[in-house]
Length: 104
Image (cartoon, rainbow, N blue to C red; front, side):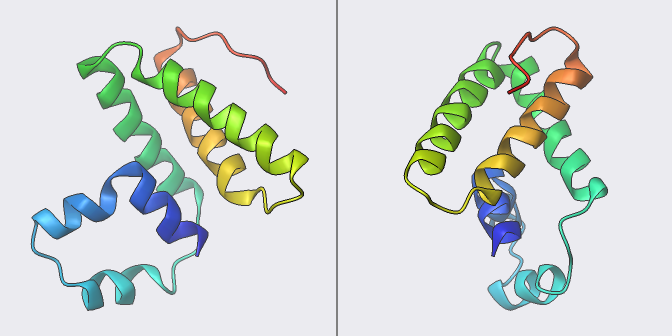
């Protein structure tokens, strides 16, 4: 489930829909695929591109994600989705090399 949540958040599902991939094709491709470094790196590159198009978008998304992670932690909710989002955004920030955030 986390993979599909991340694909939706990242805009990848929308892009696949625009390329006229059917829901069945997307499910067949991703349902047996684990979230791995390649997928994280691809999503991070998407955020690097967004940051280059819209400066500051990465910082804003990272701040929102950190708030969501803290809220989920305090509420005793599942953290993996929020943690993966943060990891992807931190990877993108590292690739850009110009965003300073806490390592909490």
